[in-house]
Length: 121
Image (cartoon, rainbow, N blue to C red; front, side):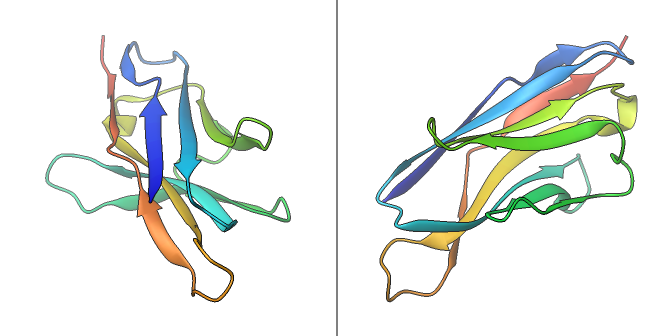
């Protein structure tokens, strides 16, 4: 069983910063990609940022230059540093890991429970 626990959400004023953390635990054999997604009220879940095991990153156009995804392998944690936050960044943010629990399985997607980010004055 794989568990992802997100922390770091909250209320922040426009222009402010937050750092989200996602701790990965459980019986995961290998991780292919780590990522953050978000879902605003009435909208579909969308990609925010991804980070591969080789270090390649991908960002949604709306967050490029403001958000940074990173990882700490020793802590098995992935981060999302969010700067210059805007009201339209308000959403529930979900951590995602794509990986295998055994060498012979295909990659599966694992999700955290989500953390609320509210950008408002």
